[in-house]
Length: 373
Image (tube, rainbow, N blue to C red; front, side, top):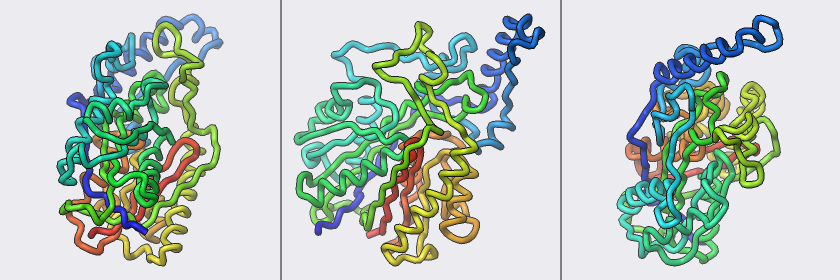
């Protein structure tokens, strides 16, 4: 069977960012206006007042300190509280295509590849801006890649599911080199008026080049030793937006047309599932957890990652063993674990092992065990 390697990664980071203090100021201004407008109903006891947020609350709940965003002004406008991304004509590149191209070019350069070497493109992300034509085909054409392309969505696990799709294609012979990209505009589906979740997401795009090891010349190769996927249906993380249920005229829609979650249930149910998933995969490969150099985990919540790492390693993990990018990027959905891998892989020595693992709505869990060549 062909040995598949990851030979390059890329990252696109938006130029604008929002600190917790900035976000809280906008949120609390909205809360103040809401409570004043609805003062009579609140005093009559027929409507609950909204509670203010704080930077201390956000950091304690998530570990997030700031986030990169596609549009800052729209999010920080208390009258709007949503990114303003102008609609483009059908002849212009979509914003997700632009993000993907930027990350893809970095990944291709690191892998020592050109567009001519790639014969399959997968766009794997939580938030696709249209039903069709596929963003992946748009990216493929913009880069001048032959072959085929398709979109896929498995929420926050999209990237790891995309990695397995690429591995399967290469091992079956349907592709020799695959570009897998994750253009996430998470702020577009976040309800910035919900205190429990207004701080969670940021925007970013990652890219990964996977290829047959026999044709790779990259100096930064990681063997994909194994991939493992799991899904279990749950309503605890949900987004009902889609072309069959449109938003209202404000562009914000109802609560269930944006991101909603039962955070406590997610924490309680997902953490043990993810740890058991990784441990089972390591057992199948006969790899002791002590042999792992690093866990590149999905960046959703600092406490979740700490608990998962502890259950896998049997002890508290150091920041070197389980790196954090959540503090400055926030939750970037499928891109999060790949950002961690992209930024914290260059110190690896030959033979060292690590696990990329993502998890989220579905529930879905995807993991890939890697070995530095």
